[in-house]
Length: 76
Image (cartoon, rainbow, N blue to C red; front, side):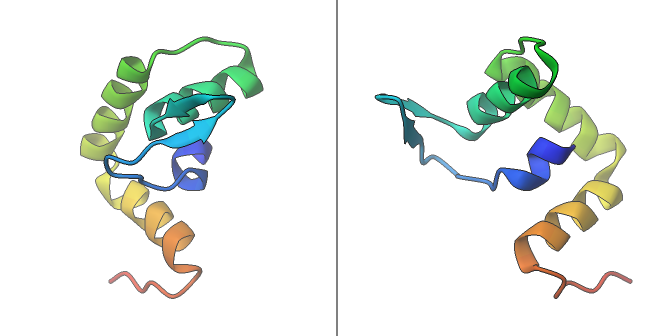
């Protein structure tokens, strides 16, 4: 969950890094590998995010809002 909140949504944009362009899910996979040494593909990351979105929708929305709006979001 930490990587999801730290790496913002990029839409169709890619981030250039070491002469290659990476999408958000690839960056999250790299983050996971760096912290856990467990390799994940971008598709595995995408699938897991989708599952999290469906099962923990409210919690995930709260964390994303907190990250993106810097304490300015109010949930009811």
